[in-house]
Image (tube, rainbow, N blue to C red; front, side, top):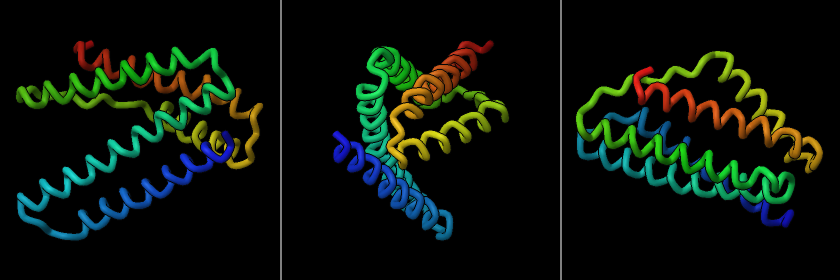
Length: 154
């Protein structure tokens, strides 16, 4: 199980490197409309690949350290995917989507939790991982709630 988790961590880090490299290259070069559209599709494809790995990685960690949270995690992921799908549909219909502003406090909390989580995973600190997973899930749930409110116009 440890080898599998290490493998997925490595995959995520490699994927992030390649995605950020592609994004940096895209920003540096001027391209015509067709090239930009193709580059956007490549970045989107890479993002989708990494997203699947990250979701599975979290699921494995939850299964190992906090199995009681597994169903809640799946529900949060389903909700997030539905929100993204709804936003995409609305954009295709030409509707203007108001950006959901995540508060500065939420961003800071997210950054702090992610740093602590990374440290715990690096150290293979099961107790710390177990204590952080509910906090990370709560942040994801909060993101969903904020975006649902935005979609409903509240």
